[in-house]
Amino acid sequence: MPRIFSRRQILAAGAATGALAWLPSTPALAAPAHRLRATKRMIEVNGKAASMFAIEGDNGLDGARLAPGERFALMLENTCGAPTIIHWHGQTPPVAQDGVTATGYEQPIANGASADYDYAPRPGTHWMHSHLGLQEQQLMAAPLIVHTAEDMRADTQEVILLLHDFTFRDPMEILSSLTAASTPGGMGMMGGMAMGNGPDLNDVDFDAYLANGRTLDDPQIVRVERGGRVRLRLINGATATAFWIDTGHVATQLIAVDGDAVQPLEISAPMPVAQGQRLDLLLTLPAGDGAYPILAQREGDVARTGIILATPAAQILKLSPQADVPAGPCGISLEAYLRAQAPLTSRPIDRVHRVVLAGSMTAYDWTINGRTWKDHDPLLVKQGERVAFDIFNHSMMAHPMHLHGHHFQVLAIDDHPLAGAMRDTVLVPPMTLMRIAFDADNPGRWLFHCHNLYHMASGMMTEVRYV
Image (tube, rainbow, N blue to C red; front, side, top):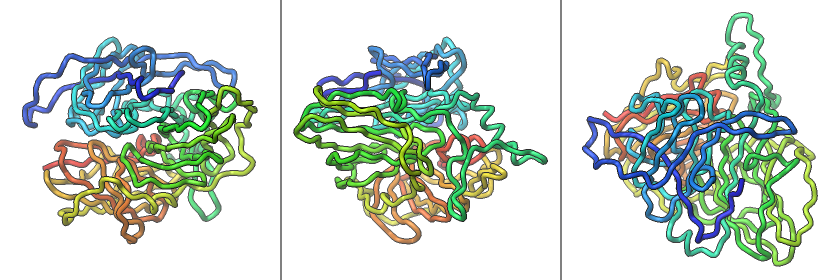
């Protein structure tokens, strides 16, 4: 599963659908330049075989890599044996090409069918994943990298790292066991842990944690140059797991989050990344030979995964898939230090929505403003407005909240103002208030939901609707 690219080796692949009748007319879709294929594959985890999904791109690569200025003109073919739909996480396409079915613009792509997509993509480190049922848990996900001219000029080696939490169980069985606690007499089967009077962590136990499809028992070894520079594009594609990322003693700069550039931040300690979020790290390797693990440890646990960067003559030692001590909650300790390279322009906020997140692991009844998706109350906006969400988490579990079709700026944490990062997914810890703001410049109906897949499936989803 090679994922190493020089600045001269940019490949692309991609996918599909139409435009709304009530939106301004758009030109016909261009002939697809590349193809993606939603399919099935066999993988081996902990010595045991499993049938999982995959999204294969051009030349056998997974996902898509686009060159500077290249349109997202792609065909998605579905050969996975079941209907599917793929969401382009981090992109801001016309609403009818977002890759979701819940808002009514698109239908699932039947097995054996295909769909075409064509729009101007947003540069940066993004990813793609199924937005149908629980297919994301079965590894229906892949990188989506849109390069810039600056990327091409940089003398760096590019390495992509996609994280997953993995289970041999049927995801529907997991969801049923979680929601069973909310039924009379239900016992539930939550493999979670509570931190005393602190936050609840990890409501699902997994069989393994994967980095580019592999565990630390057999990690990917990425060959690097002595003294070289590596741009690590890290994607947390896990369904229900936040990680601490540890680059060891390698000099590290954080240069982007969620595909949006931040003012470079020197990093000397592990950094948190929630579900759906991305980190772009610039690593400067030592001058001599060596092996440099890039580790991702599950919050509240000793379990970890990762890859190893190694020079050609380096001795590579086996690493345990368990750390010596459990990691704490991920939280937002890093968030307060992030500053956007291209923040929102200065203007008044036209509309504020109060967004209250609630629920519990006991009843597994996750809601937004007291409602589940089935009876959700849309968050209404008008085109051209500057919109703020005051998101208060009135639960004891953190929620990574993802907004489709827009990127927003983090403006405050618990009423402490800041000129924070631009993002598409923000972690809201328990009993914490986060203010985010965005410009309503992409009309339609857009999902806003928790990126813990089981929280979303249990109801923690609403929509932003233009009126």
